[in-house]
Image (cartoon, rainbow, N blue to C red):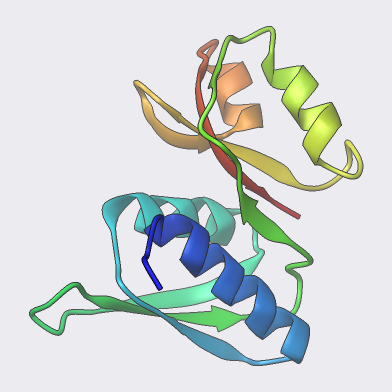
Length: 129
C-alpha cells in the first residue's frame, strides 16, 4: 500500500484506536504538520500528552487518548478566505458548540476560531470533534 498522506493515515489511526477504546496509540511516520495538528488537538483537550520518539528514521509519536475524540479526519486541501471559513464549519462540524476545523495559514497551523480572531484565511487541513 502506498502512503499518500502521513496526516490522513495518522488521523485515521487515532480515530480507529479511539473507537476500540485504546488508551494510547503509536503514529508513524512523524511530520511537522502532524505535530502541529496534535498540538491544536491537545490545546482543546481532545487528546492527552504525546511524545515524539526519534528512531533516527522517520520518527514515531505516542499519543495518550482520553476518550473525548469522536472523529478526526483530513479534508482535501482547499484555500479559504476569512469569509469562507464559516461555510466549512457549517458543512463539516456537527454543531457550532464543539469541534474545530484546522487551517494552515501564513501565521502557522491553527483552528478556525483563532484564524477568525487573527483575521486570516488559509488552507483547510482537517477537522476534529
